[in-house]
Every structure is written in C-alpha cells, then in structure tokens.
Length: 156
Image (cartoon, rainbow, N blue to C red; front, side, top):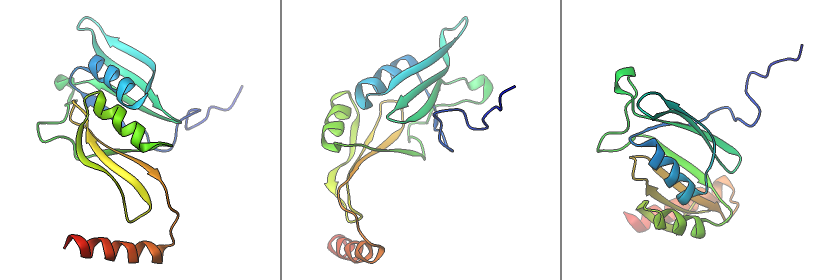
C-alpha cells in the first residue's frame, strides 16, 4: 500500500479559505480579476449554495464557500475581513488593471515601495482585501531599513 502524504500534492503549508456571500459570483470575479482557475466545486443541495470550491492562482490553491450562518460560517461584515491575501506576480501593473477592471476597488494605488516591491492593494466585492506585487529590487536588511527611514521621513 502506498504512503499517504500529510500535505496533499500541490498544496503549501497554509491555504486560505474564504467565506463569501454569493460564491458563484465570487468564483467568476476571481477568475476575471486574478486569473484564478476553478479546480472543483461542490453544491449544497437543495439550496444550490456552494459548499466548497477549490481554486488556484499560480501555484497556490485557495478554497471558498458560501456563507452558512447555521454552521457558524459568516462572510466578512461591512467593515471587511481582518485578513489580506497577497499575490506575487510577474507583471503587477497588468494584474492590477485586470483586477480593477473586473470590479476590485483600489485601496492603495500601485507604487514602488521601500522594501523592493511594486505594490498595491484592492478590495474585492465580497469583503476580502488583496495585495498585489512584483518584486523589483533585491535589498539587504540594512538597505531596506535606510529606505524605510527615508520613506517614513517623507510621510511624517
């Protein structure tokens, strides 16, 4: 008999699991905004709500399902989630335009950041925050600290 892997093939040590209102619309949005691939979906009968969906962005999976208050599964309230999902991409400018074109709301416009990333933040229509980045400059810890001091000095 073969050995069962504790972490299934293709998964990393941590996998986000999002709870949303209207999972079918969220699946469509994540496909349009982030190029996500729907790997699988299980509908809850008789309501038709999505009980579990598996999606992939790049080499990383994430799961999502509809809100099920009767089981303690709630989508983010009006204030949104206290969690942000981060995606590293080859071309953040293109990805940011794609996300905002699909309906994501800009929370922080794209800019070159002191830590060496071109970085911006959006919120999806389902209450979840996403940060998008392309790493553009390798920096030592000391270089990053100097750049941070300079950046914070400009904003203080």
